[in-house]
Image 1: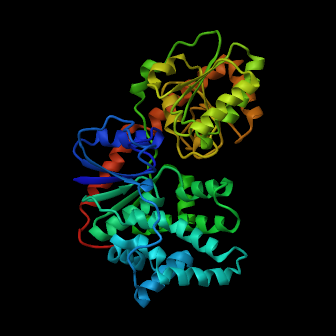
Image 2 (image 1 turned 45 degrees about the horizontal axis):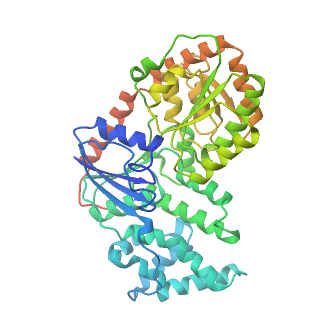
Length: 477
């Protein structure tokens, strides 16, 4: 069996929860040949592998979005009346009105020259019609080039050579999902889509906060990413997600409910047995396992630690994870500490967390968006309680959600972007060692009961086997 894993902005170049999940999948399924189809930014940013590649990964094909720039000249493309109607539906149509089979067929017919479509007369006419319909106050050329900017990465992505595989497995919606949809349609083999977070919602949050998308162009960008996800939902044979709330969001975004399988993340608690330690009195060491990027909201954590430090001066904080992904944000965090005058904060970078967890008494997570964090599950397996923000599945992991779960809380949940609330929760833990002990034990028991790595791997292997048996030579949508 040959499976093509399609990874956007993650494996094998960027370490993190999703990349670690992919590494685990490849390492554990020794009976599967894997091909990695990676969507990356530039060769400068993503030139080195962040992981030791398993031997059953037979090929890594990387699509660098930064390899090409948009050309104002190219092959002259003439579309049929039907193709122009399909392109118009993709650009300005509603989800329900878009001819998705036509879109994938358009990609098949013009795959080598998709970027040239953006300079075609048809594209120009469609944009002019939409400009008039919106009664936009922007200069038309500004409007036109913004539409070209939205669709250029997509057209470039879909023009790439497709690696051969029995199954395409997109590890997110978005560009990975549309690439998997196109490959599945053209090759006539099944697509599996796995969403750790809800891609559309994450991009919507990014765009709303962004400086690079202005005013009336925010909505077209948001609608564009909804279209990418919708295509993958329709083309996929199976769509997996991590927990029930995300399943509800996928259905809201028009994923057919019968396709969705909820498969939680899993860890092997035995791997973290050496991280557990005898509880002792003395200065408290806090820890965080994360990428130092804005979505993890490290600044709120640092502000909270500053409050804690003033109340409990001997407390320390160790931050474990990639500091180089967003150098500007990392530097802002360093400058914030200097401005506050807060000491005893270490940025350890990429380390083997199992070597450092035995030193940690309490783990922190301050994200403004998450799915089902592996960092929390690993901390729970090591019997270390958490203070975490109320995002994704964090509350269910720490407090339990099943009727037969009577283990008790494994941590404290606080509001997003509230440094005072996080600080007070940390202080409560510092001043109540018995609470820490009970929460640590509860976390380990919950992981052992409901979040085993073996259960997760068995579920995915079963999906692979079932998809392999699907008849080849057919398309979907």
